[in-house]
Amino acid sequence: MESASPLQISSAFIWRRVHSLMGFWLVLYLILHLITNSQAALWMGNDGAGFVRMVNALESLPYLHVVEVILIGVPLAIHLVWGIKRTLEARSNVVSLKYERNIAYSLQRLTSWILTVGIIGHVVQMRFLEMPKQVEVNGQEQSMVILNVDDGLYPLALRLGVTLQDSEKPNQVVAVADSPGKAMLLMLRATFKSPLYAVLYTIFLLAAAFHAFNGFWTFLVTWGVILSYRSQKAMIPVCMIGVAVLAFLGLAAIWGSYWK
Image (tube, rainbow, N blue to C red; front, side, top):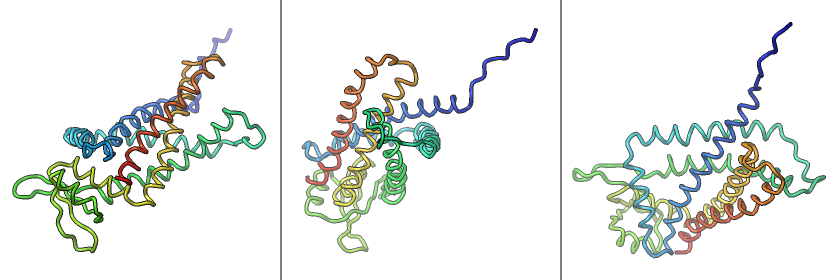
């Protein structure tokens, strides 16, 4: 009598679970990221003090770049690569079957492409092209960033205690701050002062908010947290509230900086 073969789990099954777990982790990171950025909204009246404190705390962590790669870069790469693979293999039937979850599935695929382009652009801009430089001035470490001049920049720099120096390019100045948080606050403000960037980041943000919480709903189904039709239906408005909260946090930073 032949012995029964051991249960085999396909690699596709394993990767779908890994993809789901990485997505859940990235949702948690996105919430923290947007809570931090929302405090850069200057209309709150405290000149972004909360944002400055949180950025300074993060920047003081030892081996920060290694931590970022391990906790953000690796999960993002896994989720992105497997997500693109699934998106290329998927076939949307939203035209013929206009059910609520079918529409959400198609929007999840669409937002995945928006996020792929947006994340690459965001990282290149914020982490490489416009990231404040750390320099030593009179024996003290300072953060420097190049900014476009506008009417509100000088009074804000004065309140923050940031020195503005002339730049080689017209209509630009070099801001010298005593902490990375202040320099990043001014960098973020300068980005969102651009109407083009404000619109692009709004699209990017809305796509991220929907993708995150629609993916969170799928995560709960995938891991058996909500199995019944009733529980799955009840979780949809909860996730939509999550989308609205994330959207508010991000829009506060973008348009609060643009208008103020």
